[in-house]
Amino acid sequence: MKIVIPGGSGQVGTLLARDFHAKGHEVVVLSRKPQNTPWISRSWDGATAGPWFNEIDGADVVINLAGRSVDCRYTAANRRAIMDSRVRSTQIVGESIQRANNPPPVWLQASTATLYAHRFDASNDEATGLIGGDEHDKETAEPPPSSWSFSIDVAKAWEATANRFVLPTTRTVLLRSAMIMSPDRGGIFDTLVRLTRLGLGGTAGSGKQYISWIHEADFIHAIERLIDEDFVGAINVAAPNPIPNAEFMRTLRDAWGCPIGLPAKRWMLEIGAFFLRTETELLLKSRRVVPGRLLEAGFGFEFPTWHQAVRDLRRRSRSKPLESLQETP
Image (cartoon, rainbow, N blue to C red; front, top):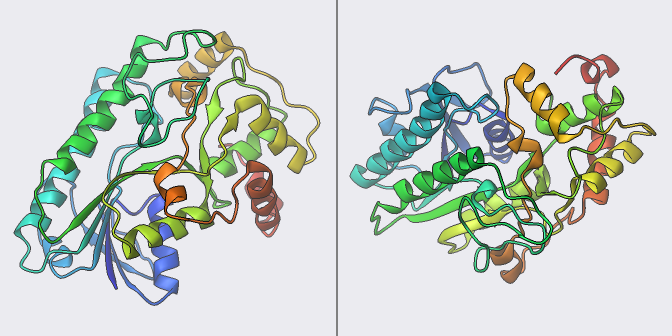
């Protein structure tokens, strides 16, 4: 197949490009800063038409991952950049598919599992999950801060942009993905490992908030399944067993033989987030998301539990030089 990945120069895009390229597919990554890679890398700005359109016309699959990182302070300027980068890139990709002489049969469009409500009491699947900025488990969870509604607004606008397009010959799938765990340098797992080895891998806040995640192997297999079969609409791409933050971090510490993990109270996280130029929502929001549609379709997870996943990731991380795990994030 010919697979085009707009915004594919980050961690997730590299995971997919590397795997698809190794399996003999023609991979084209569209990036603001094309790099020297084993696959093809083309320039685009994520907002306007250009020569890159020729890559989409005649492609078999488009996987749009474009969007500014949310790992930042939600200033007015950053909010605009986060929203605009997602909406504009989705709009231009949709327009390109719409005007193609040979449109791709499949369009996988990135979304996010943060779209679901901040809840502790029940899991969210595609059919039953509450979606909104203010729904929460009123018995055991504090109301989410009003600032968290921004992520919901972004996710809704992101998906709404893709859903505006009527594409008779193209299946559109919205990827509501959880955190993707791989041992690659610079990824979320690599960052968590380094913090854990420094003794900072303790409970965040109350520790009751759920973490949704997926092992990279299952993520790749899920993407392949979504390409090969007739899925349409929103899909939760997550492992079937989200767990509370306290258990998540304890399992990570155990796997790395780190008996101590300093806990961080909410006020401590607020201070740390300020100096690290990020937001506490990334740590404190409860994302209890399950892959309802994938499970209904009989998808088998190689790593359905965090206990299984973290041990595989540790085994593969050992092949790296020790210093690569000790550098400052």
